[in-house]
Image (cartoon, rainbow, N blue to C red):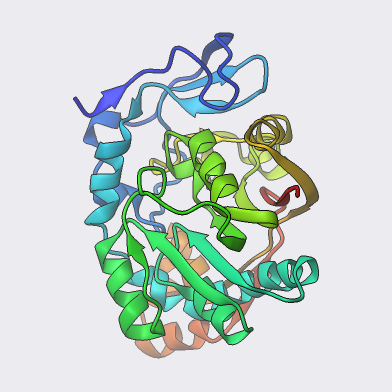
Length: 299
């Protein structure tokens, strides 16, 4: 059986959960192409339920961890790596803040590391990088292109030592899994005392989410969970963390990538020369619809 249902909130364990929103696709057709990082099936959601105690919104029914991991393990996404330059700029901001918390740097572990772009940046800044990724293709690209050796597997399930890392990063990760609390608890376990977790995830209460409604670009088949400040605070505090900084994440993409997301403008990238031109233009998107949260494991 590939799917299951929650009887309690996966963040705070409350039984006070209620139906929130009808799904807009047949969840039983979920496959590896629908969960790619660069998937553009915006507006498609699972049946969503909401916890009336902490505000967390989540897919219910949901795919079992073993099943969703099996999809990610065989997923390939070359378009993600084509945007490596822009994504690297996104990650530099995170690493700059982590360095302010930990000027001595140390060991950094990236969860859901994709092709290792963040870890490659961290390596050049003096961190000792490591991470884990479900996709076999991503693990191979990280090794061949960035000389980053990733663990291949399921972060929640894999055995890891306690008190090992100065920093753990989870960029656009926890909304993809059915066990978000277990993931941040695992991050708490592997962080050294005083270590910092950086979490980036969509904000379902953002202005962008409200004005775009069902067409919000974070409504997509790969996303199983949607956080508010209330639910994410509850989850982190329950795991033992103290939140020390909250800001909104800023994205950087090439004009080519953004045009490829918008059907009416795709004709602008069909010509090879013109397409190459758009790839050279970086655009910052300050949509303020994703949290960038730093939480500390107290001594």
